[in-house]
Length: 429
Image (tube, rainbow, N blue to C red; front, side, top):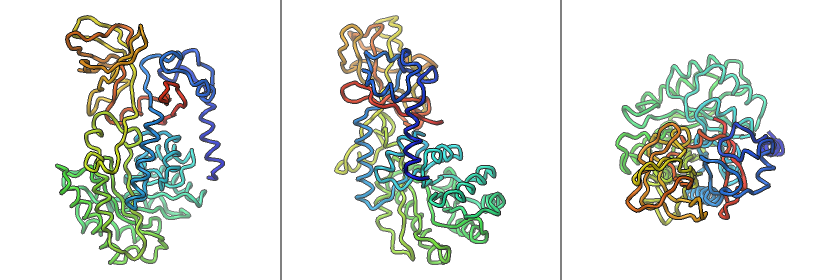
């Protein structure tokens, strides 16, 4: 897809009309286009937004995008951030503008979304055996010579199913053998010998092309630096062994792909991949971390590798969920109008961070206020003795696990430091 076509499709998001489909937006904005509403730069608190409303910090988004771009460059890594986190083509485009090789995805539907907005390089971190999806991928590869697609294989049976679906295709589908993170881990081939069997199965068919090896260190059982490092070294050793055996020879490859990297151990990936020996072809060292875009105030704040390497920088939580106090039945208890339909709760509950006083408009720290539970549409708050919190006040909460936050919101306001909503991020889940 030509650059102008990609730009036109992204720009067309601004022509979408604001209406009842999108939570939290001003009711009086119905009928405006997203671009028209953004141009008004309405204030989040006085511009008619209703609660609950999820926001993203414009400054934190930009900071995080720049930080991982710099990190990848510093460590000689190509970067294909996992797009399933956001499913937001606007953010995909910004990631590519910030030096990303391409976008990682997990499911065929996600690939279709990315392709609809012109993503040219896609790494599918899954074995794909769905015949209609494979035929669609083959058609895309035939239609667009600039499209690069790579996916996992992790079984001989998977190779057989892929071959059956792809026979007659104009271009082979590039694949990497996925090495499992250990016994009892998620997907992937368990042993080096079995990996060789899968690679040889790929070599026997004309519909697939072996381009490398990959894995996901986030699934290492009882993960710690030593165990994660040992697993990543197994990935590297597998690539070396495949190369020595000539499994990448005669395929017309420009490079060998070696890929890993979630959001918790990318420092270990950088360290191990820096020691990859010289192979018969240049190595594309492909990192796939995705949660960094928004970061969070819980799970990844605790796990981010930047805690271990603070000299490399620090990510900033970009999410804030604003809800309104709708009940104050006792001095120790309050309820806000945001619950499981609005906030992630699979890893951690939201964290009360700030309160905006309904009477004065003053924003203060949410000291002495904690979120103790979520119902479908209510958040349960516990307030310490003497805490001032009234019906009508807005409570700003930090969230945990971006992957289960983004999917609850179709259009997310981006708030600048002055409180103005300067943009809107469209998601496709």
